[in-house]
Structure formats: C-alpha cells, structure tokens
Amino acid sequence: MFKGSMVALITPMDKKGKICKKSLKNLIDYHIKNNTSAIIAVGTTGESATLNKEEHIDVIMTTLELADGKIPIIAGTGSNSTAESILLNKKFEKSGISGCLNVTPYYNRPTQEGLYLHFQAISESTELPQILYNVPNRTGCDLLPKTTARLSKLKNIIGIKDATGDLSRISQLKKLIKKDFLLISGDDKTALDFMKLGGDGIISVTANIAAKQMTKIFNFALQGDFFNAYLEEKKIFLLNNLLFREPNPIPIKWAAKYLGLITTDTVRLPLTPLLHANKNILQKEIDKIGLRKKLKNNF
Image (cartoon, rainbow, N blue to C red; front, top):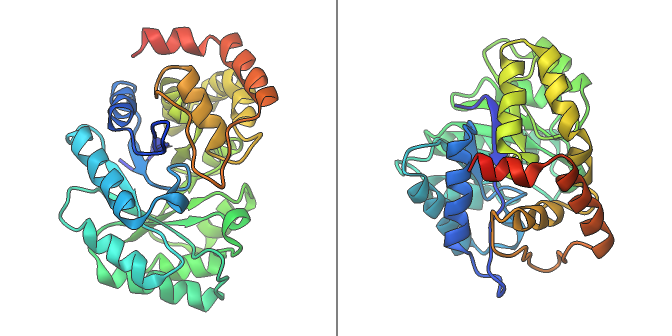
C-alpha cells in the first residue's frame, strides 16, 4: 500500500476558508476510481501549517470516514514539537489509519542527535507505521542518511519521503540501510529517476489532478518498465514544473478548481491566490494535454 503513486492531498476549503467536506469527498472518490495507492491527509500540500489542531484531526478523521476502507489513509502527524507529534499519533491509534507521515521539526533546527531522539520518542509512543519526511528547503534542517539509517532500525519506522531532489541520497541510503526500508520520492520532477535508482514510489502533488496518469507511470516503474514510464511522464513533464511556479499548494489548488474537482481554490494567509499570469500559463498546459477531457472520461 505504500508503493507506487500516492497523493499528498489538498485540503479543499470554501470561500470563507472553512473545510469543504463535499469537495473532499469528490477528491477521495477520484483517487479511489483512478487507483491511487494511498492518500496522505494534512501534509504540506494539505496546508497543515495553517490548520489549527482541531481542524487537523478533523480533516484526517473525515478523510478516513469518507474513504470507507477503499483506499489507505496516511496521516500527517509531524510537528516541530515532539510532544505535539506524539499526541497526534496517539489520536489515530486504532482509528483505521494505515500509517503516519512525520516531517522533520521545522524552524527550531535540531541537531542530528535531536532529530534521532525526536523520531525515536514518536516511534516508542505508538504502534502505527511511521514514514519520515525530509524536506530541508521548507524546514531548515536536513535529515542526513546516517541518521536515517539509525532510525531505520526502530521497530515501526518503515521508510522515508525524500523531497530533497538529491538523487545521490538513494545510493547513500541503500548502502547504509540493510533491512527492507521504503524510499519514497517527495519531488514530482525527479520522482521517476528516483524510482529507477531504486525507489519505491512517490507522494505526489501532481496526482491531485492527474491521478490516472501518475498511477500509470509508477505502475510501469514498479514493473521495471522504465521505457513506457518515461514515455508517459513526458506527457506531463511541463505540468510537473508549472505546478511549482508558486509555493505549493497554490497552483495545484487552482488547477483542481479549474478541472472541477473542488469548488474554490481558497488558500489561507499567508498564502495568496495564484497570480493571473501563472493561471494563464497553467490553463494553457492543462488544455494542451487534454487533462480536462481525460478527467471527465475517467471520473
């Protein structure tokens, strides 16, 4: 369940910024129909930074309820407070959540030993499978391969989402980690190369609007058919880049609204709506590759 194309799900909101349950159900149904491997609820793309604690828990539990056991749900439970991350993990014990995604503590910039002790404490507090999440350009700290290797020995730390975009990390991790440990890309632009070098899948932003295409690409990759995987990826290569012209999830929310998957592209401050110039560029590419027509035919 933690391989292939997984989606870092956006959190749909109405015009007032409140969670839109109807759009959330629409998104979940879309991913079930298009065979996305798993949904990650309330990660970076799900705007965890601007949801309060009650909303954070509610969105994850609502996602779990609406999925109705038809697709695995992974909960974003990371925090820059070890105690808060432990509390979030405990909230989802025995809930039906398939696992948790834990980002490195942001802003307070812990040492490698601090990172190890942080994730060790979380691991010891729960039976839920844990996926580490390293995205240094957002958090201000980097979970290095040697620290990841130490953490991989803990009972329920099963993998890492690596969003560094540094493909050399894969060989470093494979040399250091002996057991079966999942290597998951968090960078849409380099994910297929990541898979070719030995990765297991992607937690994708692009999959929010191109679920069928991403499933196809990464199913080919899991089968070792990189010739066809690259042929399919070529069709959405530019889209993968355009979705990051402004900070995520601004462009992907606008694109999801343009395609009718959600009712508004509302984001919360300090995020702001997509610039008009970028709307035009993104719209042209979506129309050029026929994504709207394909979506209607497959949803």
